[in-house]
Image (cartoon, rainbow, N blue to C red):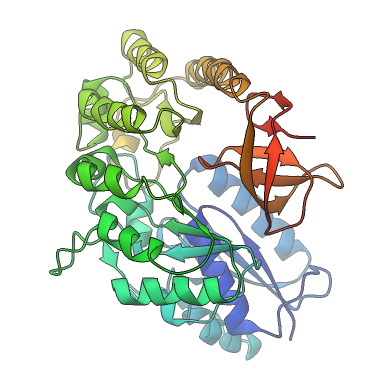
Length: 410
């Protein structure tokens, strides 16, 4: 039996898919046409993503393929197919039962330390989940239904996993979770993210660490120690900290556990410590009841913090959430607000990126470019650079051009 796997969503989902591939090796095929079974490792964070996955489900069913949908979506929405939740080992049982002609529905609530499972990576970028779930209760979020309450993996298993990847000559460790900032909040050891990072940077070898998204309230709790460890050259000076709105009343409706001022405090502390910080944030356009004045507050905030990147999402109601029952903003308004945010982001990013032109930096080449014969490399702050070079190598480049979303060294 040959198995084809498709993955949607975040870095956590990609890490889960690496485990699925390893567990089902050598049945995995890269050809959909050759596959007897198709597994979709799904995401359910946004309405448009669910729509895309549902459309893909119908396409695969039309080809008379056995289909299993795994991951977050089965725990958020009802699907008329074989389903498995976010416990990746269940996929082995699911494939066997599908093979025997059974209908499958395996949804478990208990958590696993997934670092104990085998992985198949790309040889360069190591995806390392440090926890699963969160401690939040955002009124718009359905991912918490899928991933549940925070479950932090033991620090020793994280460090051991990182050491194994480094021994295999991986060059980038991508530390990921639903919220890296709350790592350890469920443990009695007192260990939080800064101490975990200290243990990781002490590993021998030349490599870089990208720290994944953290919410402002948790970043604020560990701010002093976080700033200290970020000075280590092995950690990219990259901060992904979502604000979602620049208005405190909207943040309250979202049930976010911080104020705009607290978000700004974290951003400014990092900017002061690291002037060339790559700052990334997330904004939801058109949250229920958001007025023009409240949206204007978000534009003012963006201009104040000058982020290198904004992930702009048009609000889409998710099943079972409080926000889905609130008065909704018309789609045309959400579209216009997201357009304004996107334009502002591109203007700011382009202005920042032009400052790099003519300067020389060491970069890590970590992925193939979209144009043949080109590669993507990363600066000390994770900015992408289109260049040439050998995958996995550290090299020195001079920046020759700048676009809003990347630099050039060609």
